[in-house]
Length: 513
Image (cartoon, rainbow, N blue to C red; front, side, top):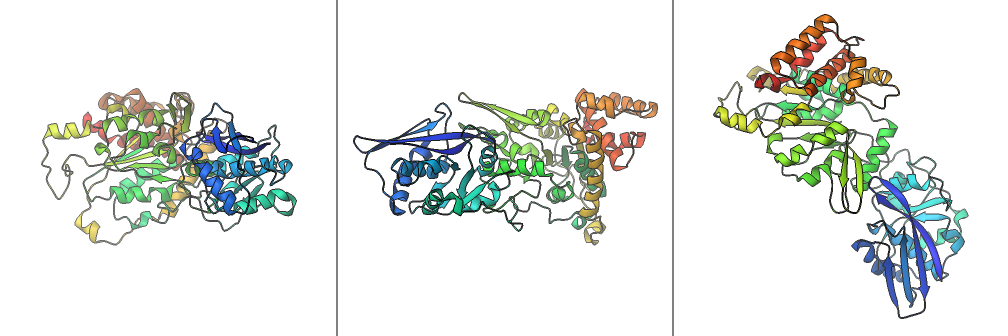
């Protein structure tokens, strides 16, 4: 007998419908799965067999052929266990076929028949709400994935804990109400620094100001200072002054982390911007994404958040150069023989480095032991094109003795964040209909339109270009920074003082000049 069940596979960050055709016929007992399954799906035959038997149902002693359609797209993961089992039970008349055709299902089965959580439920839930030829009426998901699945608008979610419950539901769907999300569900991502405060940081007033500008405009930033000056401490507190996620951004963040399996079990919507901090030994693939079945890397996991690269020159040159395209284009395209995928990469790059190999160049307490050639070689690990893509260069000096012994007296993150939110509000109003959300994303066309300079400011910038040897990209960066500083100052026009502050953030350009 032939039966069909329905599920969803993942293709990058989106889900697509999968029809599971199960044919139980005459012949020697065997179970064959076709349709480009991976090893996890091929092994599912043993999990499904045991789950069906241990749940009190009959596993057919017959020749079974299962086709995963469309057959030309590779299928991955254990999420097809539940729809495979339901299809087998439908083909052996242990549940009604008409009800089986009304619902899609996702879930991994244990040998006892329990339904375990899987990755990528939110994209599948979103896809299930799109009207298609099958006219699906709902989605059966594992109980731990219910809050996440219910985030999709108009989604009809029916969570089950065991195969027995799923079969009972399909016998009488009308007896079960759709899942209602809880208002007390935990956020999808763990705390990432929002509970840390800039008020705890001693001194570093100018650095805090630079980070405020970076947050207000979404600007990439590099912290340069000796060991122990507080670079990492400041970076860890940077998320506390970022504006809150919009619902659209939160859904994107949750979807990405769901696919990567990084969401908190039983959690709902992501409430905080992601903060990713890979070690400097990270490979290029782990940073930008890839693999045989392309997966998102750290640049995509940091989407709408922060990618913090501590000890920036210690990363391999190849890995750092791979950041150039995602920083410029705000997305990355990964091409493989089987498929080509595009992942979003709208993040703020926050880097930290020592000024020299020994770390004490310019330090008040210790003398630098490095030769000029060593310093040049150390800084050359970060290429000019990559530096051009970093808007703000901030010097983080070591603290004086009186600053170390004094009590923290800086502004709390809450006050800084309020100014950032106001500045972002001005930008959102300015860019209405432009499909960008921050000054750092302005194209050259936007710069010509929104960054007009008076004669005094124009002469100041021209002199800086001549003195520092700014590239065309760095020239645009200065204008974007000046626009953000003006927004923080609640000024409609860019004034010379705004431009002067923006030029002051190009520390490494001055060092080279």
